[in-house]
Image (cartoon, rainbow, N blue to C red):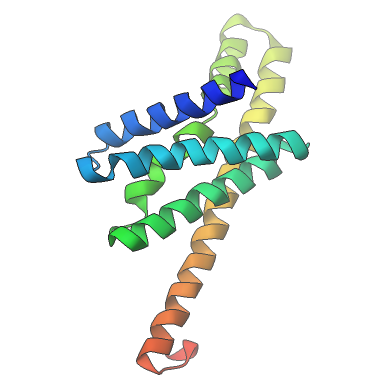
Length: 155
């Protein structure tokens, strides 16, 4: 349990640090950090109940994208403004490292195992973002169509 709390705190700090590098405004830094912490919390929940790496990473990516969409709508900024800092806890840096280490050391088993997991994590990350962004875009179009009094097809 203590390890999970440390992971959430470190995810918050990593997202906060990336937000600073990404030049997020000072007034929005806390929200960017909270996004990273929230993403890690859901990632830990999903990893505990779902055995498939691609599924739990995709679901965590959907949470991150949904958070970014909601907060960016409230702040009237593009979703990427919060999306990039929020996804930092999902970046599979350890898998990339061990995949490269397997190549460099000639350890085929290390390379194969980590490369497969890396690909699954990256595909899950991509699918999660694409699905959430697609659904958000459809909802945005419908809301604008309703406001304008037009049908979806006219947009």
